[in-house]
Amino acid sequence: MRIFNRSERKDRKGRESGGRREARFAGTWYESDPSSLVKQMDGFLESARKKMSESPSEEAFPDNPAPQGNLLALIVPHAGYMFSGATAAFAYEFAAQHAEPERIFLLGPSHYVGFEGVALSHCSAFSTPLGDLDLERKTVDELSRHPLYGFSDDIHNREHSLELQLAFLKHLFPDARLIPLVVGAFKNSSEIRYAGSILRSQIRPGDLVVVSSDFTHYGPRYDYVPFEEDFPEQVRKLDQDAFSYIQDSDLEGFLNFHDQTGCTICGFFPCSLLLSILPEGSRTSLLKYGTSRDSHKEDSRNSVSYLALVVTDSAREVAWAAESESESESRSVLEPELSEPEKKDLLHLARRVVTEFARSGRQIAYADAAIEVTAALETARGVFVTLFKRTLDFEESKERQLRGCIGYICPVKPLYQAVIDNAIGAASRDYRFTPLKANELNDLEIEISVLTPLRPVESIDEIELGVHGVVFHLGDRQSVFLPHVATEFGWSLTETLEQLAVKAGLDKYAWRRPEATFEIFESISFEE
Image (cartoon, rainbow, N blue to C red):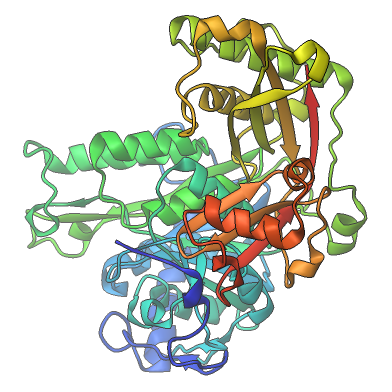
């Protein structure tokens, strides 16, 4: 599997951003003649409009709520229009009635190239038979500054999952600007949430997110035959289970479902990325369910499922109700502030977790620690848990030794849960130390550092030692120092960057390479 590295932020041929991605699949997967294409899409949309007026939501699955509130996102299929166009039209007809987006974030899977992360395009426009869709270059370029996001025009040029949505988007929202994202694989839920936090930071009120995905691919053609008896009903049940996790915005459940079933949802990772960014209170509704067998009945051994899903948010007055840039800049980066009782509760939680692990190897639930999970502790934050061991002459020298340090750089979980995870990690998974033993508990001290969101820097001159923590990226290597590390060791900026390079497993001068990038953050630290 290919992994993005920093060098891919520059086009292989050194091209500047510009040009257009041509419509490669027009004339085969959908009509290339504009009038024929519009006629076909209008037919799909009119049919969907009539059926939705009769029944607002599809009855294919039970417990399917009707859409309510502001439109946030769509999940639509991307097969040839003769197969899935009628299903996709349900989501697009709903969008046409409920949204007027100025920007559209379009996410789709890669069918032809394996890679990790999210692929961006250098192009200034994507072509359709109905005219070009202009890209929002500023947003694309901003995303490219972050890990897991990199440019690859080759991936975009070969991929059909995004192109199959463009004609509908151009037809219904001709002036909207596009942010096209081909989503590769991710290693785990933390990486998905990290990529999601970056994406979520760019979404503004009124934006529309469109995820391009077919669902279960069943049959010999797709090398997926987990059952043979009554397979249409079994496929339907598999799709219903997948929908249930999406409906609940349950990322972890969706990932477990994938691991347990080996499901063949081609847009599994784009859907996962969507789940990681949905605001609390969102709801997902099924408008239409179908399969390739509906229009290709002679193929009785294979099946591809198509779902038209809409995600709405009735809990907010404005879809994707994000802060404006001015509000974000004026807000203290350390908010929400933690009260002293909340800090004490987190330290108590970390102590209970570490103690239980050292004594029994068991991980406790937060409820066992008898703390109150307030709104601040429920908020996802980056956090590190650091363990120190007091030396023999601690009472006189106050010296202590590092005994373990593990953390989440990005806000991937609620703060209290992140503290549980990283307290266990500091006690057992720091490669520099053996797992913590019960006889060490009496000499153990615990420090928690809650982080602000990461911010890329254009120049190392922006790094302020003692104030900023630093994340170093080069290729697939990464390392981090908390804000106090440089001052504790008395390092200069150059020495700090050299040590970051060494910590990443590189030579100390690697930080000087042109493709190396840095992000900074601040933290509030407290200890027992």
